[in-house]
Length: 177
Image (cartoon, rainbow, N blue to C red; front, side):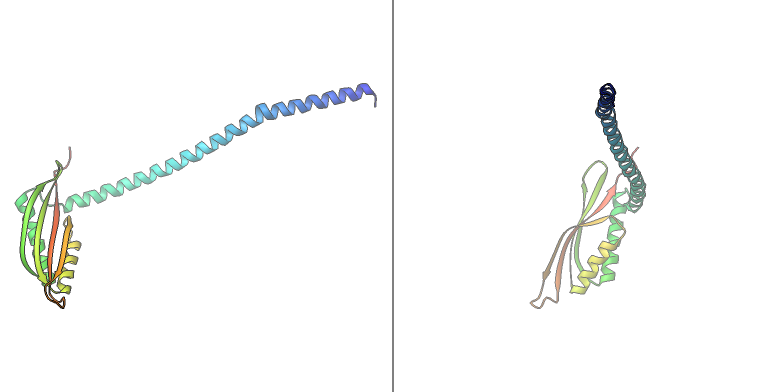
């Protein structure tokens, strides 16, 4: 090989190496970075889309559940609502064979969109009667919540128990406009 040809060949090889290096640094690396960022963005958007679809499905379920709760809500007339709760208490007493000593219902305006009927009650019975009463209260479809509960023994053996309970019933206002 002649020295001229070798120089031309080396020059061409060096030029090709510079072009490849410049192409790698100026074209390939930025494009690869851009593709990686876009792939990450697409994956993030797909994940957010999936979460949004799940929320929409959850929203349908929540609306159905809320409609069911609204149906089970107490009537807006206070005397009818109070009567409904007292009838429920009577059912629980009959199912549990507990002896009721007192019940004191009292209305509380909690917010614009709901009111609560707060009931303080005392009763006596054995362990089975007390637990059955509490079970009946919790299983009732009325919107009730036990706020306070006190169980004390009336005899040294613990056979007779005294139950003091405060529970609230929810009365929702009419459908929002």
